[in-house]
Image 1 (cartoon, chains in turn yellow, green):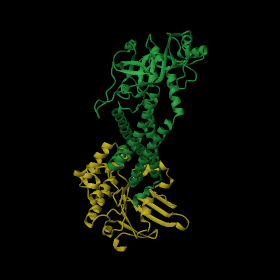
Image 2: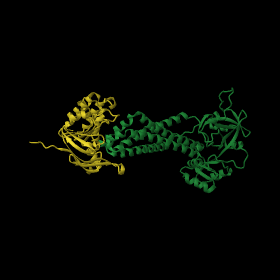
Image 3: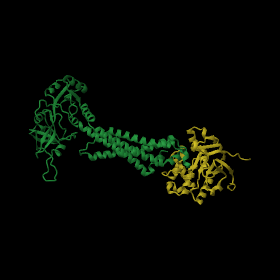
Image 4: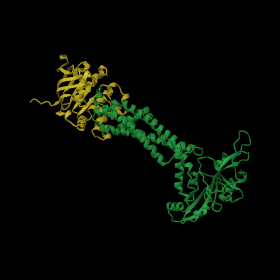
Length: 236
Length: 385
């Protein structure tokens, strides 16, 4: 019996522009994309092709001008502001190129932020974050500040932060581009090992061809739309 | 989230201290300058406060403040005594007379003549001698500041210390002999002249000959008598002005408030303190927010509402405001303590603490509002840029 895969992201006819008049820039045009739970999808393409705009819309932090984008069947556009915030806080995890850790918090506190946002008491959240940091090899550094860690270690903290509250979708923006090849590879292995499961989807925006091999599918974007979706980077 | 807000605030030490120092400075100016102002204003009526026993001060209706002497005829004293509800009424002389010092120099002094029998209105705190010593021949009591300062004798050796006036020393008031029989501690007065106490009969003897010499009539109300009604009755029966002690203090202070540039000068200093404090604290706080804008963006992206960010920023503003205010008030109190005993007028009242507290709160609100506006307008998508 074939198992029915759950649709995590369903984008149809998405269009987005910035500015008006002569300054108007069409960032996305007629974007169609499906991402399934348990899948690692990479968005690739040249700079300015609309990758970041698309994951911003998927993550619910930017509104499209046209089309609809369902995240596990829910449309951010139809939600009220508070509902949207709560849905995002519970269901979306973020990993950024520049890590974006809060520099004045310890790494355990940084990793605990999504739990605290979702209402977990601080002490419990930090304990939980500490346990997860141990799993990624940062057990002894829980009280360190981000600046005291290497880039790869900071990205591991960011990965823990993106996962700690059990989101169903993780969006990553260039997670390895600031790392050397070996560290980038390790970060991707870690991500695939601990972030990906049958109830969660990962969308990674990247330029970094060295990590294409980790993708289940790769969507190539060009000039604001999905040019093709392939299952192997050799087909790109 | 509130702890995160505090850690964000205090993590950047230089910015944190910059904001706190801005508010400390503003608080210092907004508390210290009004304290000097209040100190100065309270000196205008310190003589009334010091003359404690009387409930009511009666004077010529044209008198505008305590040093504005419009003498009355001595017979007015008997008219006041005849008003029902008056337990006792005593005369008081107040006037400026020139004292000739031992070295031949002259010094204008504030001479107070007290009722010969009761010595009502005399200084409460005698440092040398007794108030009763005024009954000795030619006796005067000198205030400590005058005795140590303007009335002090020249040093015996060049560059030496002035020799304070002491009991037994002799002055001349209007060519008449006056013997120091006591030194008293009194509140400093606005005009800073030495104060000499003597009896009423001796004071009018010292004073240049005039038809009218009675400056004030001090009245004690009978037991259970309503002061306000009694002042009204005195005015109706005698045609003189009668004020309770508090009223006369207000009349005196209001005169200085309305007729001198003191309030405006101090008001400008306070306003400048507020503006400079608001500018420093507001600008530093705004810069702090701008430098953390990406962090606020991350929090927004992760699902923190604008309402929570508002509360976080308000908490940050309240914390820097509270600490800056505490330091500023502490510095002002230290300044006041360090200056006590000097000529500087300084009086820090609880009303001033509320005043500067409200000022600091406004500064913090302005600083927070500027920052909040920026954070509210922030698109969470900035995190991917």
